[in-house]
Image (cartoon, rainbow, N blue to C red; front, top):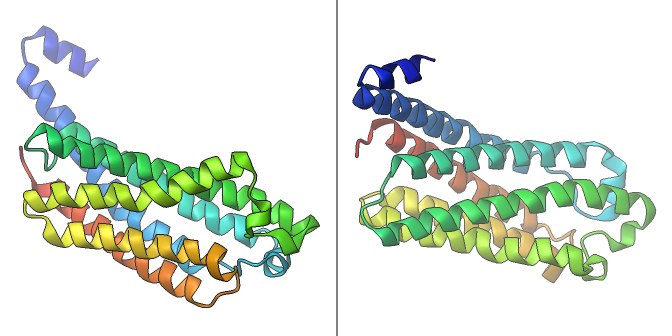
Length: 224
């Protein structure tokens, strides 16, 4: 009602300013919270093999819920920053923001799928969990695009961020997402019990989370 009244009174500039303040606040706090929440879910992640998964019960799904919450907040932050035009100086800069947004949504889908599908599989056929034998066509349509587009999207965003002087953020987000994804690839190339999986995922998620915190801080102060 207040926004409509302001427009009726001929105050579009005040309305726009109010909307941008709200967008900036959402972009900032969603980044501040989304990155660290994703990291916490990654740190708490239990064993990835079927027998270990069956042993921990609901904990596996719970850690994925935490990760999914962090990713959803990241999507909200990216969408808000895109609406603000943060770091967008030309049309080519938009590509990076859209690519990272799509990559994050795909990884969100992968995390939700993993956290719901694999605990059930572990209960009945633990030897098949996180193996290529358990990858049917519907699963592959979620897993492989996410593995490709999540790190690629942030690599493309990194070019846009570097052009506006956000080099540290660009490096943290692109390298962090890549290292984290490599940890996920190890599950299929070296088996779910491979010890470097957790090391790579936590290290990548830590850099990724710090990148989001710094990106949120930039969103809180930058003006178009």
